[in-house]
Length: 123
Image (cartoon, helix red, strand yellow):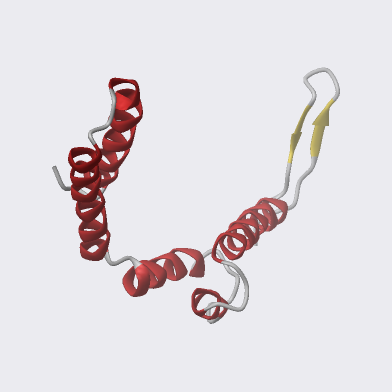
């Protein structure tokens, strides 16, 4: 078992922590990550039940993320949604005949949808 040590140098202002404290800090980081994950997905949802099925440990955080991606990360559906949005924007523009003042807005919308498709590996 590693020896515990504590060293403080007031001139340098540094502090060395023990191995136990380092492990505790790592565990705290993963608890914080789980808390952030729960905040993002919301409580009392299907995703929340998936995350709660894993104990809050450093080893289980990547497993929880992988499980969420496997169950809810349906990229093909996202691609279909983005392409449909692009086509509807083009059709809406052709039907209404947007004025020149709306061109920057149209460009920004198109650019955002294209970036979203690129992030999914589609070009």
